[in-house]
Length: 215
Image 1 (tube, rainbow, N blue to C red):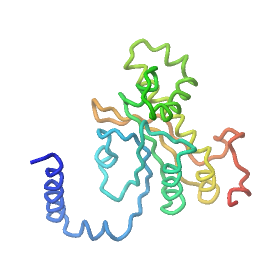
Image 2 (cartoon, rainbow, N blue to C red; image 1 turned 90 degrees about the horizontal axis):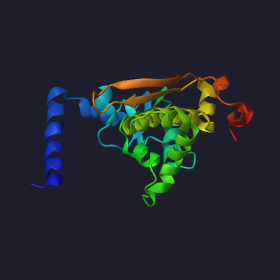
Image 3 (tube, rainbow, N blue to C red; image 1 turned 30 degrees about the vertical axis):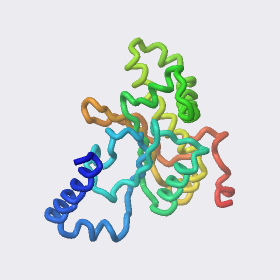
């Protein structure tokens, strides 16, 4: 049996188990999703949003990319953000990085990865901001983990710079922004930052005129 075939067999087993434990599970799931959370996480296969938070399918709307980045020219991420905030009206956005992140480690180094270099450039910009603090850390692994945390904090800041978030803050005083780091070695989440809807927390140069946000 190939690994691919095994996935299909496991899917049938999972479906059967779900129906046996909760006969109406799929009926409810098929009706409508109304998640309270948007998750912006790393593509790393070891960090599945539902499993590590103990939530069911339908409870978290998920976007993932290398190193959980909020890049203002990434139309994929922005489309997910717009849909989650404006249509689903999520109440919380979680940016979740993880310790030992390969994308973060690659950004610290000088090795070329071809097309990926363009993505890593965004992480390198974060490293440049916090270079003094990171370079003061002795071990390589700890340097990586320090940048993991700083990167999450900066991505949360990049979220509140968007007109999508600022319009939602103006209209419904939501969502709240949360920055987390997940530990692969112990399965625990560390809270790094929480940002309540408050325009005073946005650097003035990044604040849009509230009357212009509908244009």
